[in-house]
Length: 337
Image (cartoon, rainbow, N blue to C red):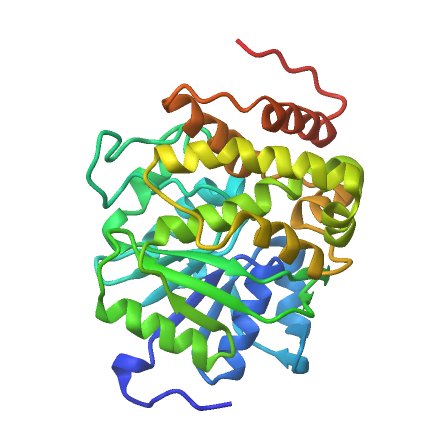
């Protein structure tokens, strides 16, 4: 693997906040490529990684690394800050790393679903609007200036198999883009860093098209698999389940069009590619099995909220979301206002 340039401009201090499957994967690949990378963790995960390091099992084999891991408060600098939590944990994480965010920091949120910054950096009737489902109290907009953010989507089907260990058997891919879709030196730098780390990177001509393409993949699979326990192969290979996913896909297409975006691939290709990923458990199913909160706010609720902006109903998507919400907290009574 190529070594990064020793030129300081190309050799930034990188910090990865989050020690889940994606955080471990990104940290390990950057560390293996020779970059200076710190990692933010807490609790038993922090103690384990401090003692044992991290391990990534991917298509290239098994890799061990010992990044500089510490709590958020113990880190003092980040030229590039990757935020890799579950989307519902992002507000608390953002507040904990706020001291690392300077006017010169590049912030790269690696999250699922509709991002809180969706209406930043573009003209139009919704410019600057806050999405209630993903940033209900405005913490993210207040903490992370949109001018520092590079948008991203990932195609990394990683699973955290143990504290400090992640496993993936599919290629590692990320798409990146400025929020206003303009070219920039920092975007070029980030793409080079990811590529040198073995993560195939693509600069999106329109980052929101990439966001919607990933959101659709998650929307029509994650909540369904959380309800059924199906793998991706089963979800898109079983006639009953793929029928539900297809109906959800048809419901979201008018929402995407209403927001002046398009999918980067044909809808049928999304269904077929999901099946080809094999017997992989979605991140939402993994969370359910571990008793963790599900990422329904960003993957389901935010999409339904964006549909309501234009009076678009999504009955099947709403029903699946409701069932997944119940699965996420079966003992809790919830009443909509």
